[in-house]
Structures are given as structure tokens and as C-alpha cells.
Length: 421
Image (cartoon, rainbow, N blue to C red; front, side, top):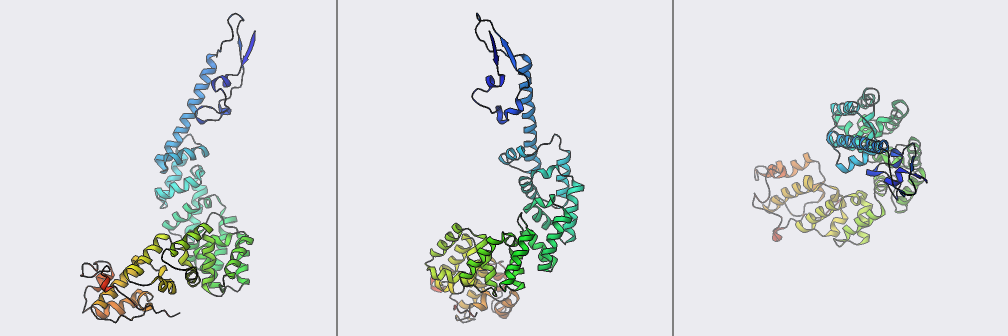
């Protein structure tokens, strides 16, 4: 009796997948094994020594190659085991000569391990690029724009595929488009640092023309592109839809709040928008009051939940303001609590409690002036009476150390809420 047995089916019954995650095609044999067994002996499985050795050597070779790449990605590129295992399926190399030369060039140009890890995860084949021929010219081009080493690392780690693009056909034309709008190299660099992976030159030009057609001032378009360049690279129809939504809310294209609202709508999903609305509702604000905040300063809705809650807690619980009063001057929500609100209010609190100023000072005179002007009005002017004011403002001492605090409900700092548009 003559029986034909497929060795792979015997080794891996009920599956077409090879052992250890390798595809069956890698281990597929190019020959059939014929088995001759007499009727008296019955059908007995039998494999030639050649077949067994072939399977074991193939599996061992693949495992070693896989393990080598995973180990390199972890030890040299800073990837986690999970990331390295995933990335190893998208790249193959037998020696570390080329990857080592790529990593050396990146580090020579100021890229940290964090930057390198991010680049490799996004574009693993960067490790196989030719450093001098492919990568170095891109670095030199960016430097010609005034990009510093630290900025270059940010730009490339955010969009590694720039390194695979043609300087003449891709980088130069797009940088020229940005330069024609933003004028200064400094703003171009800022835009590049915030640019996403996609830069459609046609979409950018069409969306730019659309905004100009609505009467949006050049300076405001420049502001929008500097803050969020990717928004201008959207598909034209989608971009126009978002802009029309903002116009229906009553925003005036001739005001800077118009482009700020466009940016907020672009960067937030509907789910995120609803969550931010809920954050403000926690402070007892009505829908109308929240919409008032958005209309006056759209970026207030783009603040993180942590920043919104921290600022509101200070203003309401420490300073005794009503949430509705904050809603009428929402620009304060865009000020840094640590760097602006707390230091200035601490200084003013000391002056109030010492009777050096009256409690009906305007809100705008505390938080809106430049740092130089604030120091002139509230620190230098009272330096002789309260020598510690400058240290308090600079964070070198605290209210508690001066015998004051914000927890004393009987002496809460209450600045008159007066705002001049």
C-alpha cells in the first residue's frame, strides 16, 4: 500500500500557521515525502532525518534573527519589549553597521533617546537609511532655515517621514508656502514644529484662499497657521464645513476670536467638547454662561480639565469669586495659575491686608499688565514698606512664611471684578 503524507500537516495539525508565530510559507518544504508501509505493518508516520533537520534549522534561524532585531531595538533605540516585537516585523537587518551609523548621526545632531525611540516607532526603516546621502542633507536644509538642534529633534520626531522626502520637490516648496504667509523664519520654524505628518500644498493654498475670501485679515491667518498649521492641510470641503459652523455661532471673520474658534473646533472631537462643557457645569455655570466664555475666548474650552479645575478652584475657593463673575472675564482662565495668577494675587493680598491698597482695584490692572508694569505698580512702589514682596512674587518665599494665607475665610482676597473690553 502506498500512502503520501504532508509533513507540515503532521507537524502542525489543524492549522496553516507555523510554530512560534512565523508564517507557514517560510517553513514550507519544496518536496513531498513518500511513505511506503506494508499492509501487515499498518500505516505508521515516518519522517526522513533530512526533513526534521530542515525544519529545526529554519525555525532556529528565524528565531535568532527575530531575537537579534528585538534586542537591538530595545537596547539601542530605547523601545519597550512590546514595541520592539511589533516593530521587528516591519524591518530586517543582519548586522548593526547601518543602524549604528544612523543612530550616531541622530545623536550628533542633538536627538535624545526619547526622540530616537519616537522616530523608530513611527518609521522603523530610518535605521536602514543612508546617513550621509539621505539624512544629512535634510538636517543641513533645516539648519539653513535657522532650525536649532533642539528644534530639529522636535520637528523630525514629530514627522520622521520628512527624512524620506525630496528636498527639491517636497521640503523647499512647502517651506516657501509657509514663508510667503508667515514672512519670518522664526514663525516658519514654529509652524514646522507643530506640523503634522500631512502637508497637502494644494489644500493649504485652497483653504488660504477661502479664508481670504471671507475677509479674514492676513495677520489672523498667520496666527492660525503658526498655532496649528495642520488645520490648513485639511480636505477643502471639510475645512469649509468647520469654518461655516463657526460663522453660524456668530463669530466675526474680522476678529481674532474667529480663527481661534476655528482652531478649537478642529482640535476637539464632539466627545471632548461635551466633556469640557461638563467640567464647567461642575462649577454651577449655565449653558449660556459657558457659551459666553467660548465666544469671548474660545481657547478656554481647549484648556485641559486639570488646568480649568485648578484655576477655578483658586479663583472661587481661595479668592471668593463667583463662577459667574469668572465667566464674564474668561481670559483669566487662559493665564497660567503658577506663573501669573498666584504670584500676582499673593502680592496684592499682602498689600490689601496691610492696608496699602484699596479693595476696589480693577481686575485688569492685576493680571493683564506686562510683568515689568506689574512690578512697577505693586512691588517696587511698596518695596520699602514690604521688602519681601519681590521674593514673594518670584516664589522665593510664600504667604505662609510671611504670616498670611488664602485659607483664612475671614480675610479672603476679593478684587473688584471690573473688566474693560
